[in-house]
Structure formats: structure tokens, C-alpha cells
Image 1 (tube, rainbow, N blue to C red):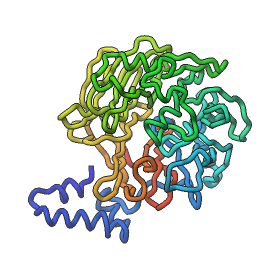
Image 2: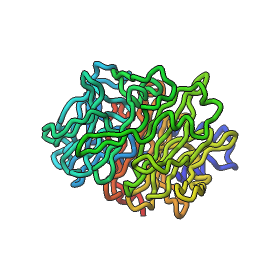
Image 3: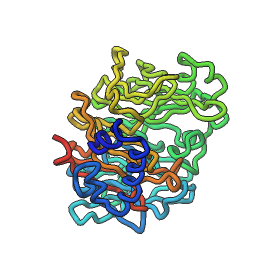
Image 4: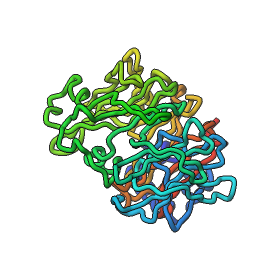
Length: 428
């Protein structure tokens, strides 16, 4: 972590008023007027290592942290382009799906438009694992509802599916889908506007939940139902609640998937459980059932890192073994708050971020979970009075395919844009 913060701002021999005044000056006046001094105080360097790969006047973002925007040859970077940045999308709002050509001066190349997107996860934009150099997968909306689309980078339509796509297996043969209209109703910012949920009035319908769909035939089958989840070791607070699912992620070997089961809590908020199952829905296992369950990532085919806060206890990252049921805490005293965590391709590093602190700054960090070492690599301005709630701009840091670069969405320039950082020189 920052030497400046550890040895100056947290130094017990320096009076609190002095430390607080220095902190306010550093994060305010110093950051705005003398950014090189700010970088030196925090990181021992004179410039911020993140560089913009998109620019205005339009806004650009990728979306969530669990997918890589780089294609397999790493010359193209997936992104959404939109005209506004200050409100939730309506059913009439379009986003342009495109790529940043990193080999041609970061030129933006439009591919298509979509009416199924949100600020947190976009249109589920991702590279098709079966052709990750040139085929793009995303969601759209037609008169019949939400659909999944595959196009090449030239914009040619290759395939349309009757269901929207949330996650794909590593071989690209199977997709997992959920009800984005229901998700939008209960968790705005993650579902899509303009849809229709046929089970909107039902609390936990038997015919809704997670669908597994063949990418070859387009045929799908319900593998986990909301009724099944509502009846699985139920809590009393679930009885009259509406249920839904979100945050599906497939294991690295493609044999299992994890997901959140959520239900509405009264008078507000929601409860969350983390589950895992085989790809056909069999061997359903409840992994974490605590008061607060948040962001997670698979380390390997059996272990999941997840932020957990049991009732009346501080939060922490747990490393959960899906097979044995054993949980261990990692990052004690170092990873002290929830963030969008993901393992590097070699499994050595955890990439993570924070929500805005009292100075509206988000911290980007790396954590060596074997040695317990945290390295803060950037701090980016993200004012909550402009971007919060459904329209917030989380960094959502994600890796490139060899673990040498990372990409974030950020509003520290006053626009929502994509930024890339080369990790050479940042980590040993």
C-alpha cells in the first residue's frame, strides 16, 4: 500500500488534525493543481500509468469485470459507445457496439447497435470463445423480446438466438441465460429496459430461472428454476419475496457455473446466496449463505473467491472450496472492503478496486494472495454527486489474456471512457 498513507497519514505520532488537513489538501488541491506531486506522494512516480484508449465527445465503456475486452490477438478492444452519461438508459436509447483498433491509433470501429444494455454490464459484450479473434457476442432487443447476437468485426450478422446470453463456456459451445426483464424490475442497472416479464406477478415461478442453451442449435432448457431456489433451505424472510438470479460465471474448465440467487427484502434491499451447479443444473450446492454476499471470481475449477460479511461481523474475502465446503479468509487486514475481484490468468495476483472513499477516489490494486502483499497502482476520481446508483461508473478492472495489462472504465476526466494500464514495472 502507499508509503505516504502508511507512514504519514496513519502515523500515530502526528496529531490527527495535522494528518486530516494533509489528507484533505493532498486529495483536493494537490490532486487538481499538481497531479505529478500527487502521483509521487502516493506511488513514488510522476504520472498516472492509466492511459485513455477512447475519447469524447461520445462516451465509451466496456462493462463488467468478469470478461476480457481484448480479442485473442490483442489488437482489438471491445467497447460500447453512447451519446449521454448522466441518466439510466430508456427503451428508446441505443448503444453502439464496436471495437477500439489498438494497432491503428485507437480508432473506434462501429459494428452494430443495441437496445439491450445498461451501465454496469453493457450488452454482455464479449468475444466468442470459438473465434475470439473476430466474432463478437452481445444482446439486443426485438419486437419479440431480448435476443443474443453473434457478428464478426465487420458487422456481418452470423447468428441470432431467441434468448439473451449472459455467460459462455470456455469452448463457446454452451450459453447460460436469465430473465433480463425480471432483473431490470428488481435490480435496475443490471437488467434491460423495454422488456416484458411474463412472470412479473409471481414470486418464484417454476418456469423461470437459468437456461442453458446450445450455441450450435439455439435450443435451450431450464436447468435451475426460481421455485427450486426458493424452496432450497428457505429463510423465513423469503416467504413472500420475489426471487431472481444474477451474476452467472462459468468455472475455468467449463464443468460448473456459479450464480447469485436473490430475493427482495422488506422494506428495501435484497438477500443474496451464492450457488454452484453442474452445467445441466445437477449437483446444486449452496456455497455461501450469509448476511452480505458480493463480488466473486473462480480461481480454478473448485475454488471461488467472494466478498462476504456475516451478520454483526466485518466483511472479508473468502476462498471457498466448492467440493469440500471449506472456507478460508484471504487478505486479512489488507483487503478490507468489497471490490470487483478477479484472478490473473496465472492465478498469482488478485486484481481489485474500491468504491469511492470520502474524497470520491477509487483505488485500483493488485494483491499477491500467496504472500499477502498489496500494491496500489492507481487512484481515480469518481464523484458520487454525479455518478452513483444505477449510473455509477465502477472501475470494473479486467485482465488481458496474458495478465500483462488491465483495462478499466472511469469518469475521472469528466467523461466515461476506457483506460488501459501496462503492468510492466508495476509488479515484480
